[in-house]
Amino acid sequence: MSETKIKIHTPGWIGEFQKFIMRGNVIDMAVGIIIGAAFTAIVTSLVKDILTPVIGLLTGGIDFSNIFVTLKGPSMPTLAEAQKAGAVTLNVGLFLNAVIQFLIVAFAIFWLVKAISKVHHKQEATPSAPPAPTKSEVLLTEIRDLIAHEGNVSAPTTTTR
Image 1: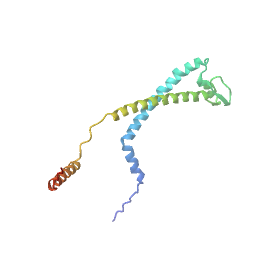
Image 2 (image 1 turned 30 degrees about the vertical axis):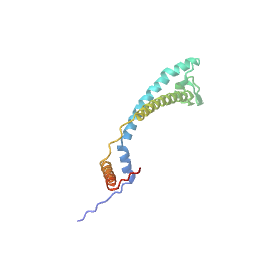
Image 3 (image 1 turned 120 degrees about the vertical axis):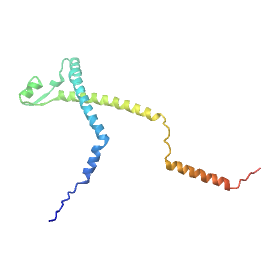
Image 4 (image 1 turned 45 degrees about the vertical axis):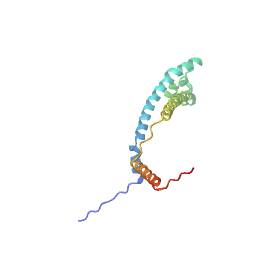
């Protein structure tokens, strides 16, 4: 009785994907995403709980989260009541909150990248010792010096006066 083995052809991109996943950059990116999600929660709270009430106070008590347009359904005084009643709404205030959150995150990231770039440029500016020559470079240097030395010994020296 002979056994036949079935060989399954795996696409080449699977190997590339495995290499990609195992790179350190992917791990760094995952850590960045997790930290970014935590940072987004902080910014969301900053906008919702601190900035929006202050802006609302400055604009005469306007609550951004309750700025909406009812497209279909009963018109209610608050967004929560309109949504509870099943009204279709354009949530302009929530969009404004999202824009404010985005601007805060973008501003914070701008300063973070700027600080990292400044530190990186300082590290580049400090001169470092040149790397030690490899064994082959040392050997080639010795060979060159021997050839130059033999050339000076065998060549007649002429002096001009």
